[in-house]
Image 1 (cartoon, helix red, strand yellow):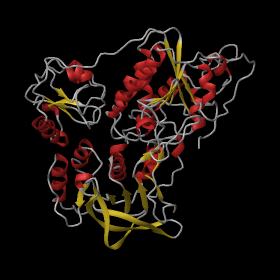
Image 2 (cartoon, rainbow, N blue to C red; image 1 turned 90 degrees about the horizontal axis):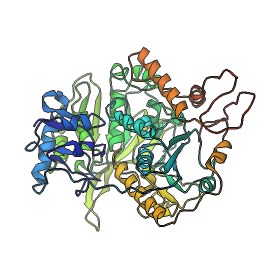
Image 3 (cartoon, helix red, strand yellow; image 1 turned 180 degrees about the horizontal axis):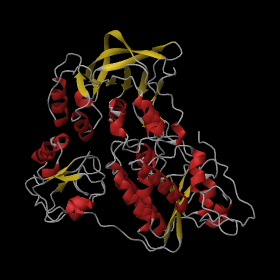
Image 4 (cartoon, helix red, strand yellow; image 1 turned 180 degrees about the vertical axis):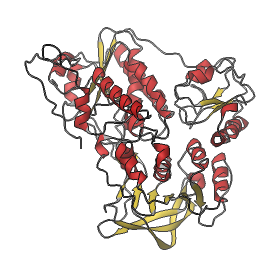
Length: 562
């Protein structure tokens, strides 16, 4: 096999378009593309031209001769896909859906949020002449979970920011960062100044375990820990106790594996990444020897993806072990085959370990003021009325001593100012992204916390298609308040693209001094201070947005978001 895909797909589809023999599947327009963990290279069709390597925005495609030992399982993974999905009906070139272009006349769209869904939506909008896009975010930094959610040892995944940088350089794109909708501006403010508003605000809340003791100190969300080690301003004071031997993570999705991997990693392997300084220092003093990852159901139902599992299984500095409660693992997929192989491994004395423990549910978090243990119960899988295996508690409980309990059982969206909200799903009710003419949603607030970074591209395309339909049919309302007047009301607060560039350049410069990609600024006031432009010769600041002239310097009024 000349080339191999080695990580979850960004769904940009650049590799599909670049491939001259259509050997990368599933492709846009094919069944399963939007839901696929990754794309695969057909070993029988690949002609080793390398076009896909240069096209991939995250460096995920590697010639088979350059695979590391940890990446070798991806050869079998790529091959096995085509045993089940041969794509015998493929045409000589990939069929990528054609994009409609709408001619517009000074149409202004506000996009709320600056993560992947927002950036992809902005890109789709800007492909239409006459459309201008302002991207709002409550933080002074864009890119959402790519900046603050992707693990620091996954620097290749963060290469997608190169694509985002190209999007933000387009004419008609503008950042309005450090502005929170619902606090600094209302939805009605945006509706009066823009033809349409697209909300791509993600799903920032986490789901609770619903067990006693969950509010003890040391019982926190795994996503809080992710934000902590990634330098998110909201999580700088997250309580992280690494002073004891064991930490328990409840849930077994990709976030759970990320946290387990980082908390057991050799800190010196992380020292060359963009991990925040304080977490790195904390990890250097860590006493953690074991991270126990609990899953209510069995190996076949595990929520983590194959790329994440392969990466974890390939580590040679940490033992990865499996506890399936004594039950035999039924091998019926590449995932269960790898988990079965891990179950045969034995621990190495003195080495840190990650234990994937299946068929185990939490009963209570135990402690006196802070976490001391977690009480769990073994489960049995029984089909419900629809045939879906459900975890049913069985037998006596067990108390497992630990220093922290990290819940990683899913995200949920928060209500959005001025929009309807479905509390059961944690989403804004919508029809293909349309809430009503002029108001739209994209990303997790639209569809729930599913998919990967690249899934947001197809999601954003669908939403923008609905917006363009409304534009062409005259369903969008003309603004009554000029955008520049609205932005003038934010004088002294906005961080624009130049401000973000100053933050980016400062972080990268500090990183270069220490052989790191960047050293993140994690304090919100410091981020805003770095974003400010230098004083001009007249003593006035130029902020890149229309502002009233003033003879004295403006001060930041930002505060830490809640």
